[in-house]
Amino acid sequence: MKANVGGIDRILRIVVGLALIALAATGTVGAWGWIGVVPVLTGVFRFCPFYPLLGMNTCPLEQRKGA
Image (cartoon, rainbow, N blue to C red):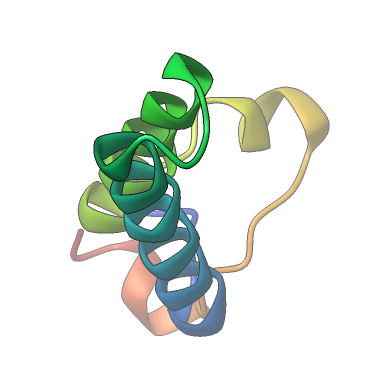
C-alpha cells in the first residue's frame, strides 16, 4: 500500500474519527458513531482504499514512496 493520505487530511480524519467514537461511547449518538473507527484507521495507516478508485491523492510526492 502506498500512502495516499496527506498531512491535513490525516489530522482531520483522526480528529473526526475520535470525536465520533467519543460521542458513540458516551451515548450521545447511536451505534453508527462507531463508524469513526474507519477514518481513524485510514489516518493512522495513511491509506484510503477509496482514493485510488476516485483517482485522488492528498499525500505529497516525497512521502508517497516511503509509507
